[in-house]
Image (cartoon, rainbow, N blue to C red):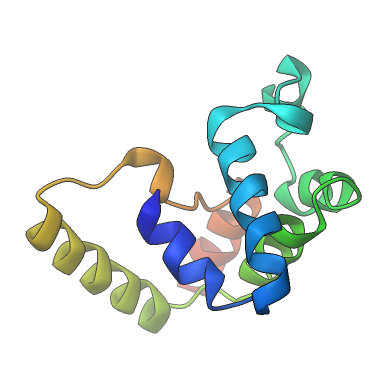
Length: 116
């Protein structure tokens, strides 16, 4: 979690870092606006863009970062860089927290399969 906070802090101005920390902790702990069980159902998380668009009204900092991350097109070059980064991090930390990974939605997986 500290790595994610450190990296995402680079994406916001100094005034928003406290709010970012609070929002990330709430997301990680499923508290505040993230505590509703329905938010985590398969139906609710089916389209991550809609999910974050709705939650962005209550948690604007983390919502904006999530929206930007999801707008990055998936490509093999980006996947290779990410994999290398995570492997390096695993070598230095000897473990990677499962929640630190951003999952690709099934729609994006279909697009990747179509491109091959």
